[in-house]
Length: 98
Image 1: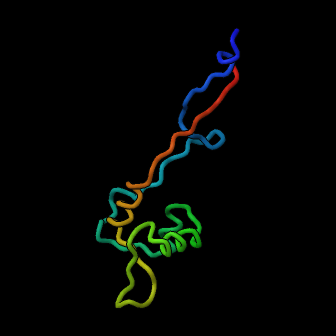
Image 2 (image 1 turned 120 degrees about the vertical axis):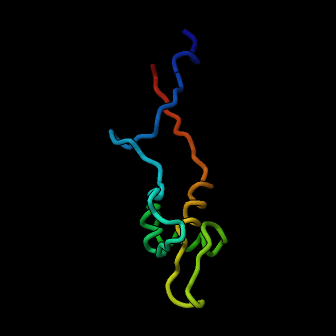
Image 3 (image 1 turned 180 degrees about the vertical axis):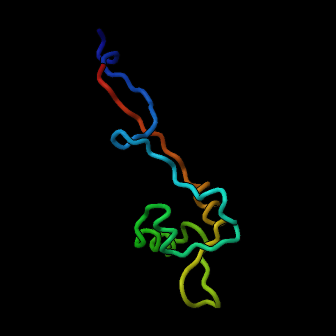
């Protein structure tokens, strides 16, 4: 048997243990004109606030708004959906010896 044939690469859906990993999304019934607080957005996308703050500083991610230029940061549901839709999906490659 050739060495190349002993190692096969196959693709399968990404899993975390025995639990299927689901993509991050915003519920369909949320109004596009609705507002999401900065903290809520970070929780929704399961990303630390410091990471999202760094994205904001570098001009990455959704466009944030403050009412009258002060106060808490908000993003519209539509803007959050657009950001999540533009995120690249990577495939997980699983190697098995067999």
